Length: 310
Image (tube, rainbow, N blue to C red; front, side, top):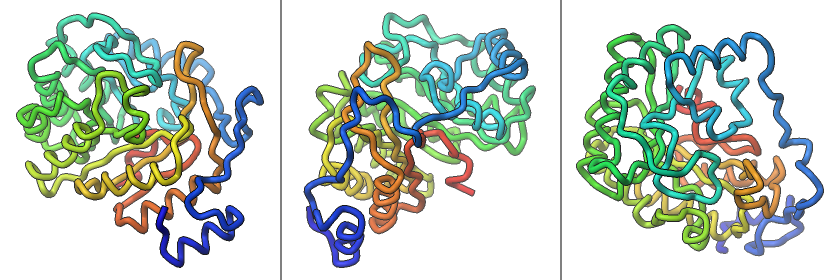
């Protein structure tokens, strides 16, 4: 991996002079999660009532479905990530906790129900994501647009970020979502090129980059965003390549977080990165020109999403 002189100093100071051999990260399999990974689980009557309220409206949150470690923090700050288009995904990414199987037709009532939840909970920032719906001609793009518009009609001042699947690379689907003018258009690259066939079944590395490139082409002023998981066996040079590929397609915001296996059925963690490792990755991304880089053990694509555009 090529590094400039300043970056060489960072490597020598933190990693004993290794330049390009990868971060010196301990393989901690079988040792349990390190102390910096642990998050406080949301408990108590308030959390139970909130979850029951969402269930009463028949709306899903990725916070619950993906077993997010930041659920208590985000909900406490009036930020929530809703998952539209049902809770069944047509693909089988090996890192993901979302259920797989044949999904039901999209609910025509879903946009209204989510807008009602946003208003009732007094949310000030909403992220909309979805399962992948390869069974739908537009991949679910029209449902994204309807939901953004419903929120805007019901709650003035609430900002909306979309985190979309790849829509099989269809330009018209991307254009449909952008027609609702979300504050941020996100699509996660998730992992490095080499690991795509093993980790992202049914997805394609170049297609994911193309989604972000097309978003910038269609709406040059839109803020675009992507996310990377680390800890699945990638090398530092591969992370750098992925970051540069994202910058080459005009990606503005980047999140980098530790992969945590949500169940025994999912891929195991290969390595745990330290807080210092994440600091190095943040500095690397900032040097490349990302507007904001959020990098840390518990960072997720929608965690602190509101602060990345403030």
